Length: 428
Image 1 (tube, rainbow, N blue to C red):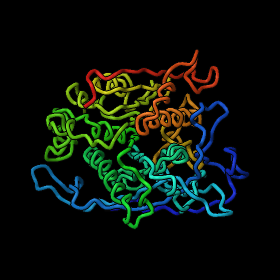
Image 2 (cartoon, rainbow, N blue to C red):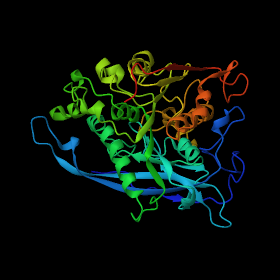
Image 3 (cartoon, rainbow, N blue to C red):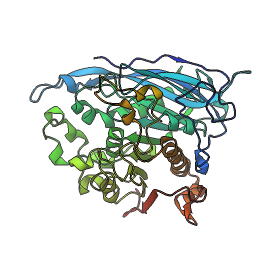
Image 4 (spheres, rainbow, N blue to C red):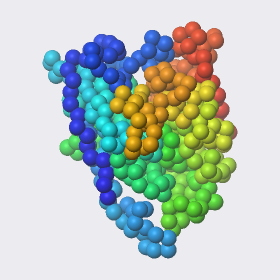
């Protein structure tokens, strides 16, 4: 099995000490904050560190090498993870750095510029900090939502983004692997970060993470896994459909297994599902969605041609009747609503590998990416502050303040819809 390896990273000194404007000669900024940005899109008080680390989940079922009717193959599933965290910069050390990353065309790399400092010392004195886990789409990688990762880390969260094996740009394998592994990957990373966060672990995360206060963000197939992790068991009919994982393995996380809904990890306090894939293909029904009780912010474009809107994200939102939930809609946006970083300049060229422009993997035909990112960063901050930190005053950011939502400048929430539903039954 070939997996993504840790990518070359290096510090660029002296950028963004107090401004979000691009430094001379730089492109591919992931930390732009537009003058139109809502209030909570602004970066927080903390300097940001970033580190790459690895983890292995031993003896996982190997979907790629398992055939129907044959014993399940097993392997050690190896993860490359990225952590953004509040940091203590050394004297003279300036905010800012860069990551060289693989793009949608795996033969092309790009350099992303942001505020995080590679290898900076953690600011343990103010910790431990709540944990946010970030799960990309198919294909994707751990940097796809790095705008959000940096932004939340600056506000006192430890953010860990996953490279999902067999689902990255340079390691894309059969879709059945992603269908099976996503919820297991997310739960494994939660447990592994909790282990590394314990005092005496020897990890830079030791004493830095409060895993009892965890949020999850999932985009596309990351959202698919997230919906399952918070109690949305898969429908019976999709356990054995064509191209499903072999040996009815999805049944382990199916709605017919009462433990899927009954034993949702209590450390997960809130979830943000961005364009979650699967509902349009029948992966959930009313019984499965009724198992969700975790507060959820759903995010979608009303013109989503991949996960769909009415029959996709909105249908999940409507069906999760036992959870308090919101649906943030970018009107006329497609599948890339809010999640991906602005398209790197290197993706503007035609790709013979993809037979198209990798730019379209990141961008939207209607919405500006920086504006979409700023809006997501704003609402994600309010949502995780509310449900992960328990800051009840953040609830007002989900209400209109005159013609606009609270925190938006006049006439700058145009094009957004925000629906809210309370839980049908009491939380247990």
